Length: 348
Ligand SMILES: Cc1cc2nc3c(=O)[nH]c(=O)nc-3n(C[C@H](O)[C@H](O)[C@H](O)COP(=O)(O)OP(=O)(O)OC[C@H]3O[C@@H](n4cnc5c(N)ncnc54)[C@H](O)[C@@H]3O)c2cc1C
Image 1 (cartoon, helix red, strand yellow):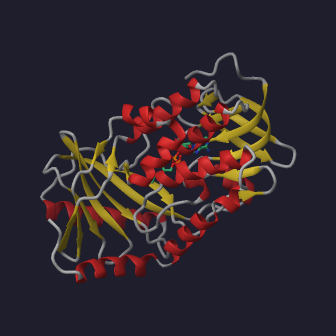
Image 2 (spheres, rainbow, N blue to C red):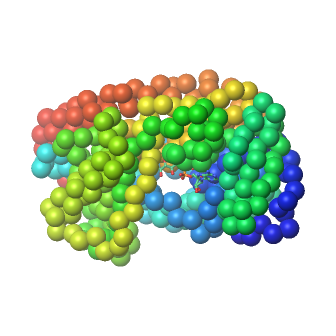
């Protein structure tokens, strides 16, 4: 999407959303539906970007998606559903059929983007913020292709710019705390998904069938003591062992991305600045699930802006749960696996 004719101007909007991912577009869509004036800035090509993500979500994520975009939009994405997931731990298998949904993440993000644009939302892609003066309601922004700068005046600014949130860094002076995950394409080798918990850390490897192909990946959610180089090599080593055991050779390039650790959730900073999704630090530190929180936090923030329960209050239970999970992740994961194994016979 090109930004010709619109640069070199000062923009005004009620809501400036930085980040046109799932959280940003969901929030933008809900605000636009109520007639609000919204501008989204996205640093990449909004239509082509492809978020690294296994794209797995439980019933709860589906319900959240439907409550924002409606059932026909959900159905239009044709999610794979209810495949069998085998959980493994310590070389043992626990079989169960969870009601999971899976779809390429690009499909989900593009659908949310189209809904936002269809509702008349404004978007400038290949653009980001350089400085923010939240008290004055001004952001200095840049078009990343032309390097042209432009200003945006806003009533409220929302960081929806993912785990490494620039908005958060600019407003708080601190980098968010992060975990790491890697993923690669793989040959199809069975229609059962596998989740194998890491024996020495918090996280798991996965194999997920996807039509004729599949993906393999590793998510390492144990933050303490790892720098980014170390956490990458831990993920690579774990995934290599997993692939060897499964007899799989990844076919594509291995890609990596950060995700929040869940240890430093931040919903708001001052009177005009808010955060949603990964930028808010919302993740399940046990499973790495963030799609549901991206949707939920966006819906609750939109409702708060439109006169509903204040955002922090509406999110209280979720915030407490996310923090509790992150602090006790290792114990919870161990106990969960241990308890399930102690039940004995795997369900078939
Ligand atoms: C490998 C991997 C696998 C995962 N698998 C799952 C899974 O199966 N299920 C699940 O529930 N969760 C999963 N997650 C987590 C999930 O992807 C995230 O929680 C979710 O994407 C959060 O959505 P978001 O919109 O908040 O952030 P994002 O999807 O990261 O969107 C942020 C957007 O902001 C843009 N942006 C970033 N910086 C700037 C900037 N400075 N200026 C402007 N724009 C910017 C980005 O380009 C992006 O479009 C996984 C994560 C990883 C890394």
